[in-house]
Length: 339
Image (cartoon, rainbow, N blue to C red; front, top):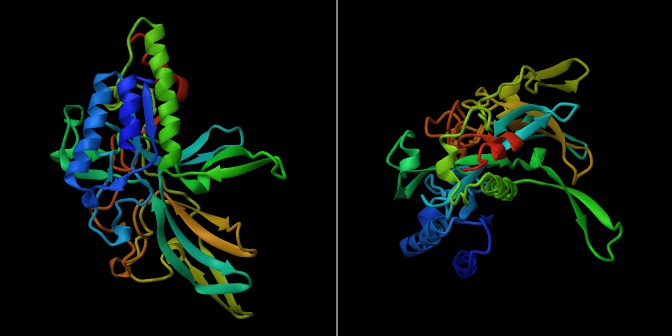
């Protein structure tokens, strides 16, 4: 990968290099972190933005390791792309956006009813947080801490609210198949696409190639990005499980998402929905959206609890789940005209 990216940079093959891969920073050799960052630094000097995904496992504590981030998105010379969940209105306008983080609870499966609900906890979310190696760059001077913070920007990544992709394979029956995909590996090429358009606008207006995207993102004009803030549904999932004709157990949203376990964290801001699991008949899940952390108590070893102050959290302004927010399409690209 390093050799391929060096060839792209050395030959100046484009204005944007999009990377949907990475290695866990705390488990990556220092020499490799330096090499990857050097390629991004060379790219920036050549007027090329290297954009990298921040990962799909939150702060990676779900893997049983201390909180960390993903490389090469951690380089101060790269642009780190996080993710959001997206809900649309019937007219396809945006109903709400939330920092991507899903918790999951099993309600029914192939004729079985789970009482209390069987909580699986955190099942995926956007990577973010401070680097443990790279110092904070000047364009992040207003952010907390002394180290490089991830992400810089975000876009659609939640696979449960993902993008529809039409796949065509020769001699396949049917000839074309629609699939729904997500992950920061979706958000990163989407952002890279609009950054290529921003470069076109800059040049069309008499400017030059923009180079690294990240330094521009912290001083955008009003309206260029959507600031993704915490959301809370007025209709969080509740459950009434009928044990017998005369006995019904009632569960509030916290009871549904935490499996009625003491110390659960679902009382935090989140949106919830019922989900029919497509791979097993008669299987229903309760999903939460907007919590990039675990709804289960700390002692369930499901990653950082949402009750932990160190949990990845969406907030007004820059945050460690969505960065500065999501691009506002045309307004975002237009803001670079003539730069």
